[in-house]
Length: 350
Image (cartoon, rainbow, N blue to C red):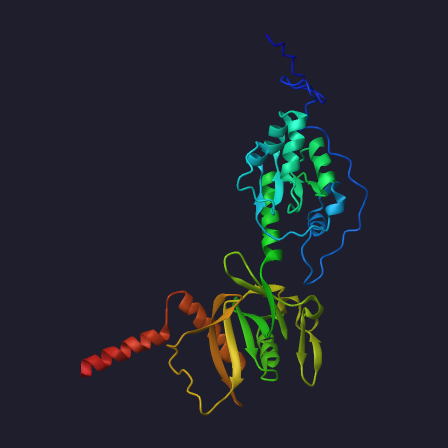
């Protein structure tokens, strides 16, 4: 009969099967690597691991050569099955997250098998490995990470909480983005994107709306990104945040003039209002039955076309458009109500 050595439960214990040193997941954190200057992400710059380290304050303990590895997908992965030897359908392009479950599982594996599993886990596509919940990274993971130049990051945040924060951050950073010429305002809680040719009066209309108690999000250039639920969120580029340009007056700081309540950092876009010069030869919708949309980042957004000519109060019309949009969202459509009434009257006279 094979003699089995007793398992010691303190650090540096031996496994019963092989007598090899057993990794203790309850060991203190590893000493962090020497400090690296972590750069802030610039607009348009690809998201890389060092941006993640800077944003969440992770401790880097291995794989410093891979800090510039790109992060291309927002989904995370907990590689429990891979560590058990099942690598079919394993997504190497995702950030790999190890929690208490994964770390305690690999602690019972022989050291040689741990190293082999971690070598397979860290492929050229793997951005990084995050060890959560204050767990210690296995020595074999550190060795494999140095060999593959894959950063290993430590966090004391509970695994589920950390994954939620990471997912939200990555979805926002990796969402499809575009920048368009326009003005974004919040009117009665509705995000309205004003579009139209240069000089049509978008900025002046936004300024009048701010004076009437509404909020400016972005003037002239609006950065739009697509959220996970196919919504659109707009914000101003950093260089022009809180600023508005009025021909004849120059660039105005809306927050300095009207207070912090007159501006907003970002806003979901619910309605597009396109301003165009009044065209006598064009037939404009007078009932409101025609509902048009425009496509932004492959998302259909309701659109209203407002013809512009002297004497029209655009700020008031946009306020009414926001209230009308809210009524439609609540299920009331005044144009359809009018059409039904008119139909009833015609039926009675027929």
